[in-house]
Length: 167
Image (tube, rainbow, N blue to C red; front, side):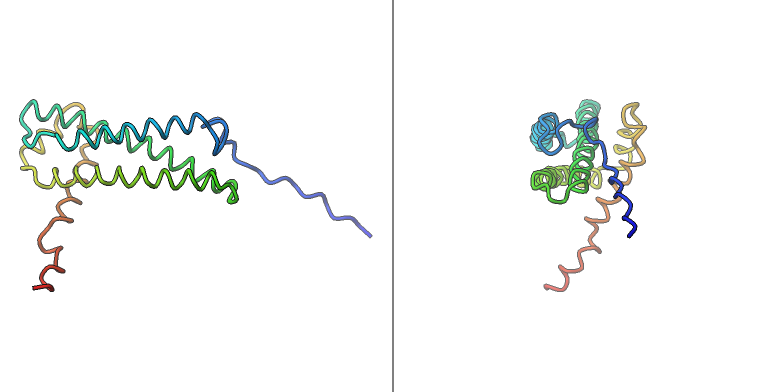
């Protein structure tokens, strides 16, 4: 009777070069801890951002927007790593914990995005354009215009039809 061929090993992702230690990685833990602290800082700053986009106000907003963008990139890295951990081993409870933790951080980041959308939607066109025309924000002006467009869509009176039905 012929023998079955030996099973071939299944290829596995090498996540060690990203954060060594997998779901127990101390480097990944440090990444999440710093991300959490920086989110807290951005949240605190958001509550005191200037209402006017005069020259000093623009500089404060530019710094906050660049920080917001950096948070998004770091959050995406954390989300991707957690997803890879879970995909690599669906039975890794710690990986599922990482995903849950990142989801909480992402919800906080979305709160910051809502704050930016609201501000952008309510800013006069000329002031908004002066903000986007700065050297720091010009490279991301398309994305910021999208944030503004979404904010305006979300806050448009005709999008709140549910209110009319309650009258």
